[in-house]
Each structure stands twice: as structure tokens, then as C-alpha cells.
Length: 108
Image (cartoon, rainbow, N blue to C red):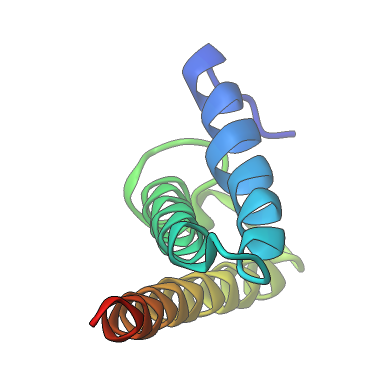
């Protein structure tokens, strides 16, 4: 069981859960630029949160604190999650840049 403080629970609910879910529909509307930026920032926030809790902090959610047969599964899951979150960050910023460029072209 992973326990967080109040800020941690709110952060997980808003940044890691709600923001990506809100950003996806925005990518298919006229607010594509906002959706892409929200996706990029939320995925970056998720990445930073995961790196802190899984690799840097001394909490019960750190890979070094998990022992026994589940250690390697937890380690590789944490690494995979970090890779996916980083890829989501890069994709979000790429979409933001592409949609911003497209938006500027349509204004010209």
C-alpha cells in the first residue's frame, strides 16, 4: 500500500489522472494547441512524480524498498512507466509545436 500526503493525493488526481483525460478530447477540437500543451505538461508532471517516488525518495514506493519475488517486476514496471511518460511528454510538446505552427500559418 502506498500512502501519500494530501498534496500527493490531489496531485495524482489532478495532474496524473484528470489532466491527460481532459487533454485528449481537446486534441480533436479547435483547442488542439491547449490540449497538446495540457498533455505535455501533465505527462511531464507524471514523469517527475514517478521518478521522485520510484527512484529518488525514501518511501515505500521506491524500487529499492521492494524485496522478494516482486522486486524485478516492480523495477521494470517503474522503468517502463517512466519511458511511457517521457514519450507522452515529447509527443505532447511535438503536437503543441505542430499545432502552434499550423495556427500561426492560418493567421497569415
